[in-house]
Image (tube, rainbow over all chains, first blue to last red; front, side):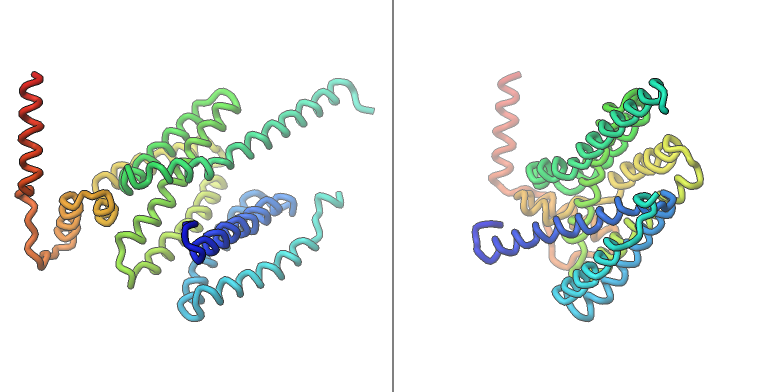
Length: 94
Length: 215
């Protein structure tokens, strides 16, 4: 993993990537509780988002490739995260 | 103005909340523990055994949580159970990548991963339907877990590539033959599994002789 320079950089980048993906997945999941949703709706939102994203990504990856899909999805996540950050949070106002 | 009793109640709630957060944070370290242990035992035990062990740990952890009488025991059960979940979930994906042909690998992965989402939805539905975590644990985690252990032990073969890496070509050949038999395919190349090589036969004879002398 770390012996060859090309593998070393890829491994380090993949570690960073997995860390970011986990942050991106679990932070909104924890934030959903602040949005005054019922816990069951949270489960439905997360489960359906996961299922749809896996099937959708399969078609995208087979057409445009892994790298482009990664860059595209991270760009979408960046925009959506910004929207989520500036969302109205009812619990804080109450 | 709040009374002393209500203040004490507030303090108790806060203490419980802090304790609960720490417990939940500790529980989330299961991934790290699971992967560190998997790094050392993954190749040694093989894919099938890890999947079975993961399922056993999952069921055991859940049973421990079910019968726990305090928070620490409950969290310990969940910790063990989650390590088992991490093992059998990730090793199953590795198993797919090692056994399925490259042309069908992506489809298999997509089906397997999308069922994770379906599982999340089913989980939510179960909780909504029963409204009792203990019943959900028994009916939807323990019972399917035990059935899965039996099914995996009966149906799933060890990944031949893993056996080849472990320098066990005869066992790998046996698994290939078993897979071919399940698929109703006859292997094209003549494979000899009945007779061991001369060095192995000699080693077995010597081992038997030593055993006879010692007894």
